[in-house]
Length: 171
Image 1 (cartoon, rainbow, N blue to C red):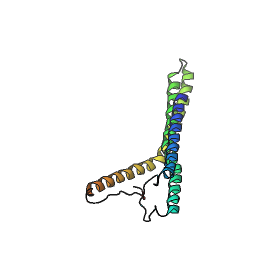
Image 2: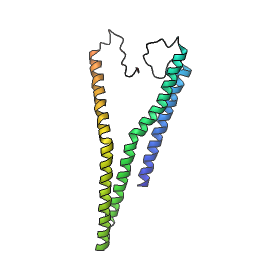
Image 3: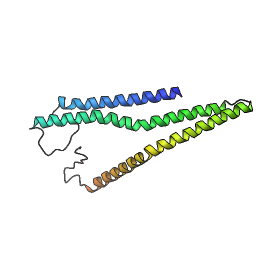
Image 4: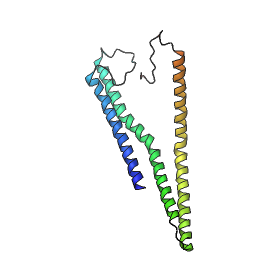
């Protein structure tokens, strides 16, 4: 179990560090070019107003540095919890396999295994109660966004208008 948890820790650490590198990469774009790191539509002219340009660049940089690691941690947290549960189930199955010939000792071990199994089902039920609705809602809203995107792509005539698909001012 410890090897699996170590692998899981390495994956989460690698993903988190990669998110930080991506966030730092987006910060550097305005310094090396006259463009924002994330192209957006804005009602005012950003090339003439440098204060507004740098305010938006700082806002994008901070939101990227805070947002990307937050998303990574939010997505991996339930996975880590379920990884612990599977590790405990593996330990439980090993203790069931290692029962002895002595009936009294085997009954005591079996009772302990049943108690551990009941605790595992309670933990899994709690995880499901906490994260089930959230992930269902996330999947539902993602499906709606994909449907809206495909509908928009099907309706918009690409050769007649300059098409910009904006979600929260992001191209």
